[in-house]
Amino acid sequence: PIYAALQDVENKEASLAIGGIYRTNNVTSRFDTSYSHMEDCAAFISEASLALPKYRAILGPFQPAVWALVIIAYMIAIVPLTINTDYNLLSLLTQPSRLMHMFWYVFSTFTNSFLVKDPLLVDGVFTNSTSLLI
Image 1 (cartoon, rainbow, N blue to C red):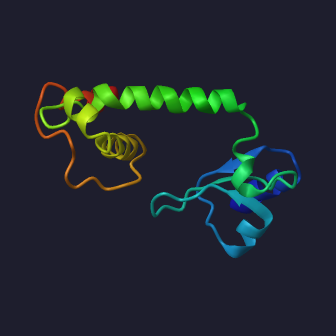
Image 2 (image 1 turned 90 degrees about the vertical axis):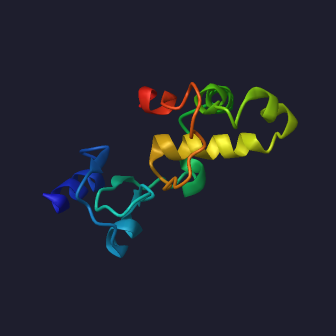
C-alpha cells in the first residue's frame, strides 16, 4: 500500500500521501517530505515543486499579508497565554527579552516540538490557559 500511494502521487492521481511512509533516500529524492519534528514513521509526501526552491515552496499559496497577520496574531495571543506572577505586563515592558521566552513556550506547547522541562507558568491565574485552549 505504501508504494501504491507513492505511485499515485508520482502519476498525479493523488496530491499527497500521508502516514506510514519511511523517509528513505529513494523517497526523499523523488518527493518533498515534511520535516519530522519527532521520531515517527509518518510523513507528508507531495510532488516535488520544480518552480520554487524547497524553502520557498511553503510560502507559495499565501500572500505576504497573510503571513504578517498570522505572525501579529500569534505575537498578540502569546501574552495572555503566558501571564502569571513572574511574567506580567510590567515585567514585559521592563524586560522585552521575556517576549522571546513566552514565544518559545507557547510554540513548544502547541506544536509539541520541544520538551519544556521548566515551564513559565508555575503559578498565577492563567496557569492552565494553554491546556484549556489545547
